[in-house]
Image (cartoon, rainbow, N blue to C red):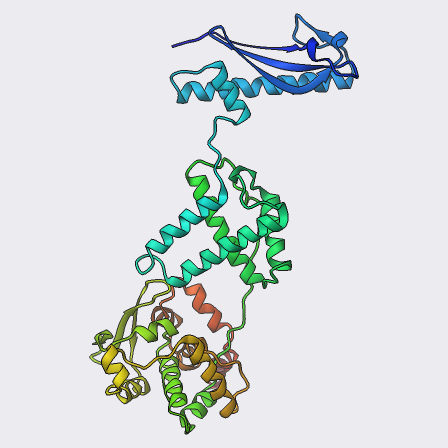
Length: 404
């Protein structure tokens, strides 16, 4: 149903300030019902045309004021048109609320972030890994600390988050939190997911990340050479614990499994592959991607070694795996005893499988990527970039072919 709709500007002479200027108001009239909005501009009453509803004169100041009023008027017309499309009943008060933003439910960042994390937590083990949940929890904690540091507040309306907010958050992570580039970028990426969620729900009209660019830097991934693997394999340890940690670490060097994946392996994961030999069929906990890895002779040897171990029998696991912290602590001791001058951690075994064990021996990168459970081959390419020896060997073969 069409309703009468009028707009006009007027000044309130009963609110003249000490400098002699009066405030300008915009009056919205729909079906005889009125709503007045302060234009947040002032003028000398002598310069106001009551009939034309605008300022009079040819000065730049007058032209600027009238242009501002015209823009405000057009904004009201635009909102009126939007409301006609969305609602059956448009009122003067409703249009005023739309213009002032008071019609919108205030949505605060922290509850939205927390609700997201609650959903992630509910899906841990199905769609998300425990590590993913921990990263989002840390991201929320950092966000709260940043709000307090920058604005001295505990929460913020999501519509107040803009490009400047993102840049300040990035700066805070690098300066106050002392985050390295890749760590800062990952936290910002987690925050960006929350902003995308807000936009998808129609709570934000503009992406605060427009214009923000930050790239992950390629980090050199440490790995063991063939000689270092042999040194660890040959070493006799007086401590049974060190021997166990060494064996589990070597198993990962020859299968590429991460700590969390080795810890959960059981006999049920061992099956016969397409070639008739034993393989391990499992899913990577981090990405939930299917992983199938043929068992090399050394890996099979290590599995057999612990087949009757009491802990493995009782818990139905392949290896008596300690906590990640203890494993890494023992690995540092192993590196020291074996004369390996590297910060040895369990994850280096995975890097070693990708480089020394597979890529260096001519296994195609596509096969390595599949065995590692990577969802993107670009992740695997980081390993290939550091294999100068493989490049040298390949070129030596080429030289001999060309010479012959």
